[in-house]
Image (cartoon, rainbow, N blue to C red):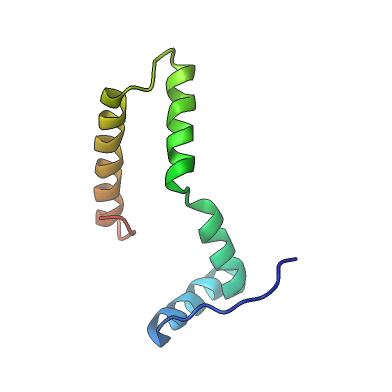
Length: 87
């Protein structure tokens, strides 16, 4: 197991994290671990895009990257309207 550390946040955010963790039957620490591992880094997203293009028999060109960005922007707006983060 990793060495414990602290994260500074507002009381409001901490309270929200506690509610979310309670609703899921978990701890704030486990909730944060889940959230952190669920989200991809920019490098991970890029690598997955390259792999997906390869599987489709496409070269991952600048044009494909631009289309990918349009798709990401669209999904961010959808999530925002669903009450999630992203826009």
